[in-house]
Image (cartoon, rainbow, N blue to C red; front, side):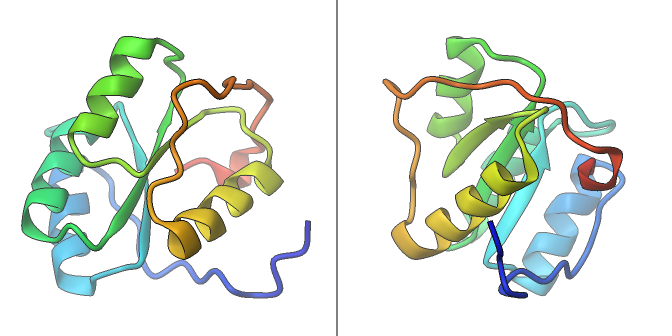
Length: 122
C-alpha cells in the first residue's frame, strides 16, 4: 500500500509519562501506543490522554492478543488495537482508517500476527 506521505511522525516517547506530556502539548491526530512501557503503561497513558483530549485517536500496539486486554484498551479510550507484528501496510491502513472513520475496532474481527520490522518498533 502506498501512503503518499499522509503520515508524518511528530514525536516519540520513551515512557507513558512522556507520551501523555507530548500528546497534550503537540495534539497529534493519532498516537501509536505500546501497552508495555516504563513509569506508566500504555493503558494508563491512553486513559490520561483520552480524559484530557478525546479527539486524539490512539491505536494500541501489543504483543498480547487477549480479549480482556483489548476490551480494557477500548474502554480506556483506544480507537483500535494492533498486535505487534502487524505488517507496515496494516499499521498505515489502521492509522488512515481511524483518522477518517474514528474508532475502527471491531470486536468480531480476527486479529492477525505478523513480524514487524525493527524500523516500525516504537
